[in-house]
Length: 416
Image 1 (cartoon, helix red, strand yellow):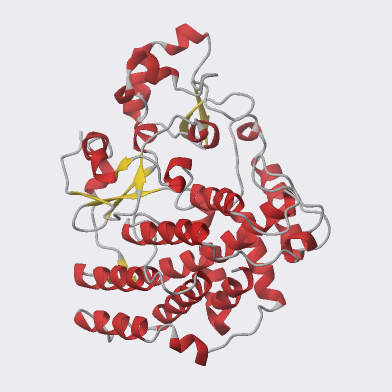
Image 2 (image 1 turned 90 degrees about the vertical axis):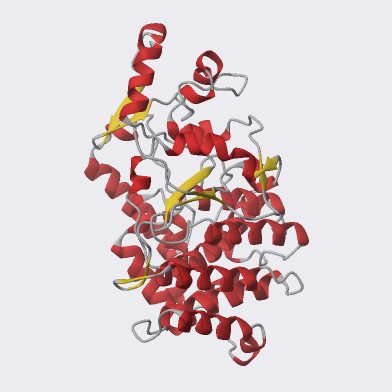
């Protein structure tokens, strides 16, 4: 059992959460099991009760078995968990008990960030985040990797100290929290900040100088954006955006996918990715449960996402939560550097805009609504930090390409 480590609850006063039993997480996630989870399931005797194995193996790891529609085997018709009902909350797999919190060791302790795939998190419903501390502490003791604490890298192989991490977090958070600035400008500024940070030479800028750099960049906004106009994204940049959006809606399930030959599955994925890259003709599916627009042109012709107060509140809560909760870099995001992580988050902003427009187009709407943004954000945050392909060298190369020639700004401005 892991020893106790410092636990830092997300300090975001505007964000609340309580479980309201919608069951979406039980329908939408594949639950990877630890040895302790497997031992609990055996002790509970489910295989004898149900007459079948309750786990499935996929690529050497054990997961909870799913029903034909992709829902967890233990999800009941009333939307509640059978394990919880018969044995109590603390007898569920640790991944189920943690959700929608994400644990991210950062060098001084463990940050507990939030996943916006949860409806209650997006709707901002429930109790204060601090009220969940005891449950998180108990679950934390079953996550031994939380002891493998090392500071995130600033850029390259340079490890960031606490002052440098806080400089980035507080600087980005200060800009995002400027409620008198329109949402589209805040998102444009966020993309500009991420590109500027990625271009910095941190070998010569360390310690308090990082604070000075971030303060200087943030203080230049929003005026600097007026002096640095950008053109519409080029063909290659739009192509990369569509492929990035596709990568964020990939959704393998244990309802037959795990039995497919690896080569067959990869060829099918490659084919659909190529169609997203071309961006012509019919769309080969979107997120599970979404209506699909007839043509890519239906998405491209949708107006940009409006910056209504409700949409702005949701998007800004998500970005601030991601940065302050340790989910943008380091252990919370594939071990990426801080410079890479903020650029990846800027790309997520552009993908969120594209997917929100795709959802609205599929619903035959004339404008993008809060519902479409929420649905798209659920898909983005569902994959963030969980989809292995988003942490690969290929994704880093995509970001390197887009960070050049103001690509991230162009894409954000083209959707928001």
